[in-house]
Length: 486
Image (tube, rainbow, N blue to C red; front, side):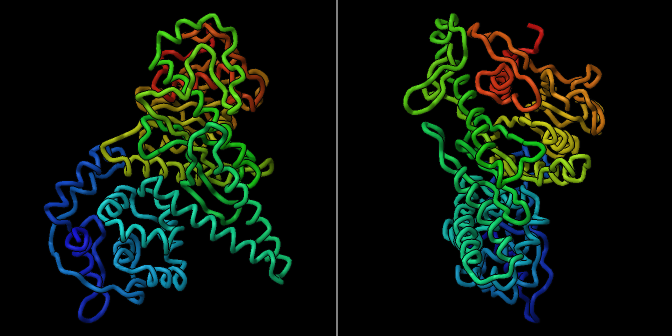
C-alpha cells in the first residue's frame, strides 16, 4: 500500500534496531514518497503559519520503502509523535492489548499531544484500514486528538461513549464500595447527558461528539452540522456552573439556536428579494411548522438551500468554576489552553479549506477565550463576548482576531459587565472593541423588531437582538450587526 511504502517507513526502520529499540526522530522528520508528497500540500495548508510552525508536509522527505514489524514491547518505549507512528503498524488485537496494558501511554499522548499540524499530517498519510484499526482499538485517543478530522473523531468518541457508559453501569450494578458506587453513579449521569445531547432537535442538523473526557467533572463538545466542511464554524464557550452533567443538553440547545439563526441569515442572502418583501413583519421569531423549527420573520425558511454552510460547537471543554471557585483564574488558564488547541486542531485538519471561525463567549467563558486569543498561536475570524467579567488583556489589539472583529455585549442588570473583575473591561471605550447591540432594536435588513436582553443569562435568547447579531457576525456579516446606537 502507498502508506506502507512511504510515510511511516523511515520511522519504522528507526524504531527497532539490531540491538533493540532506539530513539526515533520526531514525526516531523518522518519520510514520505514523492508521489505522496505531491498530494499532501493540498491538504496541509500554508495557513498553518497561524500555529507557529511551517506546514508539516514540507518537513517530510522520502528515505525508505521497506516494511517492518512493530510489537507491543517496542511500542511501550516510545512517546509523542513516535508513538503515533508506531501504533499505526499494529493490528487491532495488538492495539487493544497495548491500550489495556499501557493506558498511561494514551493518557500522556492526550495530555501532551504532538502539534495539531503533525497529527494532521500523520492522519492524512494513514490508509483507511489503519484509521479503522486505530478507531476501533483506541477510540479515546482518536476521538480526542486535535488534528484528526472532527467527524472521524466523533465516530471514535461515540464508540468510546458507549463503552464508557456500559462500563459505568456495570460498576454501578456490582458490589462495590460506597466511593466506587458514587463514582460510577456520577459517570452514568454525565455520560447519559452527553448521549441525550447528541440527539438532533426536530428539523435540526446532525450532531457529532468531537470531545469526550469523562474524568473528574468531565469535558465534552458537540458539533452541530459538519465542521469538516462548513464555511462558518462558531464556538460557544460557557461560563460559571456549566459542567457537562448539568448543562450539556442545555448548551447544545443554545448552539442549535445559534445554528438556526445563522442558517436564516444565509438563506436571506441566497434569496434577498424574498427577504426584502417581508420587511413589515414586526417580530423576528414566529411559531414554525409541526417540526418544531423556529423561523426568522423577514427571512426565508432557514432550511432553504444556500451555497454556504454552518457548524456550531457547544464546547464544554474545561472545568467551569462554581460559586466557590469563580474568583480564581486557574480554571481560565487551563481552559484557554484546551480552547487554543481545539482551534489549532480545526485549522490543521481543514488544511487549505479554512473556515471562518467565530467565538461566542459568555461570562467566565469570555475570560477563557480572551486568554486563549492573547496567547497568539491561533487566529480566529471574530470574537463576541457577552456578560464578561474581563481579563488581564489590556486591549483588543492584543488578541489574535482578524480585522479587529472583537464585539462586546453588555445588558442592563448584568452584574458581571463593567466589573473588570479579572482585569480590564473589554467593554470599556479604551479597550478598542466594537459594541454589540443587546438592548433591543430593528433588524437592518428586514426592519423587524429584535428583543432586548436583560440580566446575565439572556444573551442567547431566540428573537433577541443579541443572538441575531451573533449570527450576523458569525457568518461574516458584521456590517449588518447593530451596535446599540439605533
